[in-house]
Length: 440
Image (cartoon, rainbow, N blue to C red; front, side, top):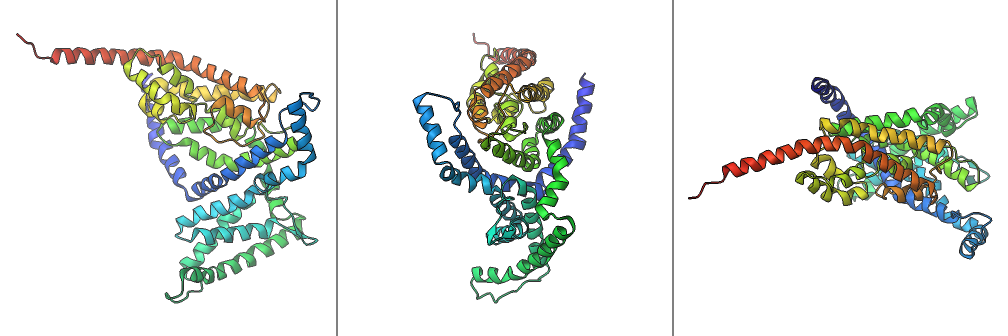
């Protein structure tokens, strides 16, 4: 067993870790991740407004408070939807600017100017003008992949032109703001002369503008991202990287966020129109069923540690239990430790994977409501699960079941590790006693 573990660690350290390290520092992945993080506050508030507009009450309720809320929502539906439409409804605008601004720092470009250039590039291909009005169809989830591509393209064009001195340079005496305005003129022209003709050509040959064509090409990947194998693969990669000491969640969420946002947009549209909600695997599913207490679902482990007979483990449990409530578990990961600890390898990997299977089938069978809202990842598991599903009660039960499953799986491994620690503590006490000077 020890030899097998040593081989596994060797593969992780020599093969997986270098690749994951490079991937985690890759400028496009980090920029996409930063762009979604920048847009997150707007999307969370927008999602909350959707839940407020469609309260979790039966349409036939006779309870006065609920009836009044439903009637108010129906009467002022258009006005109440405005904050949602201008936050979640235009998420790609925030994401486009955020990605380009982050990528600009890798090229020593001005983030504001680069973000505005990216916004223009996105609008140029994703906001067709008809009868004097711009279409907002691709400002939501359908335009996410277009926003990512145009943000990267426009920033790279700007960086290339500046690197090769293909810009208008003004004397040093000119204020920096004015100098940047002239510096961006040629990149703006380059973006217009490349993207606009390309969009017209694709539309004339396929009948689709660029966002439609991209979604048609990417649709198989979007569909595959909302499947149980995709969930299990994402969890496995995240857990293995974290076990090696690499922040696997940042890498996985950086890759999955575009798919999650596209699917969330479809779920919200279906929810608002009263249709069947189509997608299961969202960030709310990831955060509140698979990562309860942080990566590895370690909140139940933290509670178990608090009752440990070993002083070291009990102390770590007390220190880590409160942060774990808010899905912050570095004290547990590095204090117990779990990272690179062979005793905890199996439960650390298997707990979120088994919970993924349980939560997937429960949701697929209609026993648990699906995610329609974006929630902060620090929201405690049962609360966040309910919030994400429009305050339904079934996700609370599912989250508690996942916590119980995690506790049952961690317990035997914790007992084995506790035995080792108790032996070490007893040996240390004995050595400390032998070291005491003998007095006459």
